[in-house]
Length: 91
Image 1: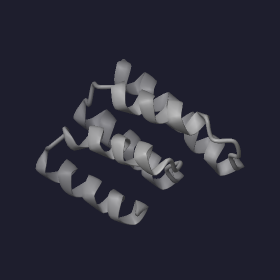
Image 2 (image 1 turned 90 degrees about the horizontal axis):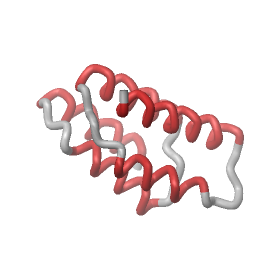
Image 3 (image 1 turned 180 degrees about the horizontal axis):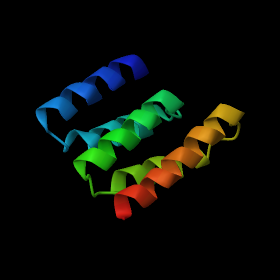
Image 4 (image 1 turned 180 degrees about the vertical axis):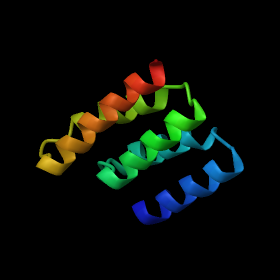
């Protein structure tokens, strides 16, 4: 799923449609899976260059995945990177 998601994200970014980012966060919230760090890194690049400004769906996603009982070290790293993304968006 994440490889496809990353490709879709790149496609929408190329055409300048930022509204898809809320869909990315909503989809991952429903899947209840932590995004891999490669996806989080790509989101950081997109948000910085495209000036995305909505934290609502990202915050909902973070709230959901923080409730998971077992998180690996890589999951916790991705969550910290996503938390920093909230700050980037809000800045």
